[in-house]
Image (cartoon, rainbow, N blue to C red):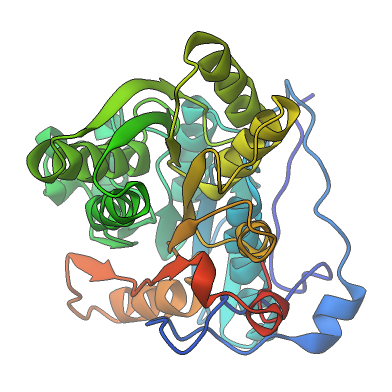
Length: 356
């Protein structure tokens, strides 16, 4: 029997989140809901072989903004933070918002089925971060035929499919994130060294674009830095550790590792330590996202940099959805403002201010 995970208004498991920051960050996050933080329970873990989906209900004559959110899953702390922020915001605004939520458990087919359920419900707006870039034409055409606007969040779809398949995208500039990581990498290595790369999920726009930004910058500007190997760690800490272990067995002269997210970076740090080396010193470590674990590792001297990609997007998501319900025009790409953090910027106060 398929497991249904649909969180509508009245959610009892909520959590306020605020982005990590210091004087140099560009991101302004919503204030944390302290009462919710004290009482919130961890999200229930999904069973591996079951699909979580939204209920097949109808939205007729509802004056509230009804949003269907098809989340990728729980592959990282960053993803959980995005989920918690969306659920928290909806729960704080039950007078104007209804949220139908589905956990796709990292499977595209589950996201597609959830979206079709949202169409059947007749939600006002559908929101989802595509687990991969390709394969969305059919279901997004169905959204168009139903007259339901679509917001892509934190990831995009393949450009060849045409940007008329969705209404808008709220996301970071992932190419920029890769470029910033490359700039810091060049500084850390003094322009010379051998680097390995831990890529995100194969086919995910964030992974494709972060790799593009990093690799292209290194190739164009750092002739004495060599990317000796690059493999997917699927955006998870466990895979990040496993792939880094393989790199360390294959190469004895690795100077640095660039990870497409912080969870893989934290896994790589474990592998480096178990190999008897000092992460942050013997092997430089750069990640992307800006999760609390990365800031803690930088404070401990085990990680050198993280490029922020904030998951605190709920207010932008619901504000944009409300405009679309009202027939207003919005920008095709609504960019989130992110920062770059290096270890020398991190204090205990910065770490204590992180909520994800």
